[in-house]
Image (cartoon, rainbow, N blue to C red; front, side, top):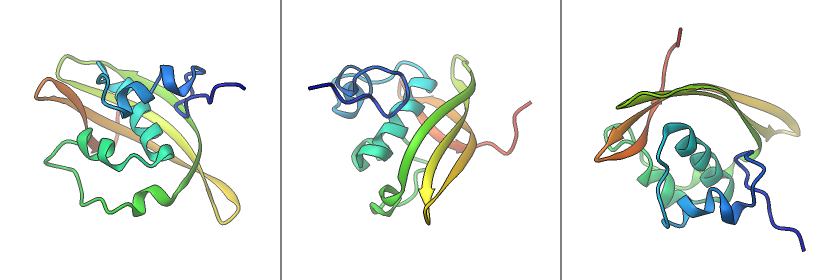
Length: 126
């Protein structure tokens, strides 16, 4: 029996990749890893992890409807690491009405209480 690959696109088994973060065994040490683990949380339906990894000032009320989307793949376009802020540009494909669509976002991440958290999308990035 083959191991399930992680949805984040790393090519690693889920148990050796994002599941370490989703289960709370450890926490991502950079914004790109956090973004990948958040994508995996959407795919696997882990609402508590999404809440925990979202900046408290920008986290919306999450009721589970966010988890209804059928995500199909993730591509990290680029990322820029900073000491207290980082930016990750990604494309996440999903299925809607039988067609594949893409969410293209440039996201801001910040260190909050010594952990990386998702803040929200940026309007643009040079």
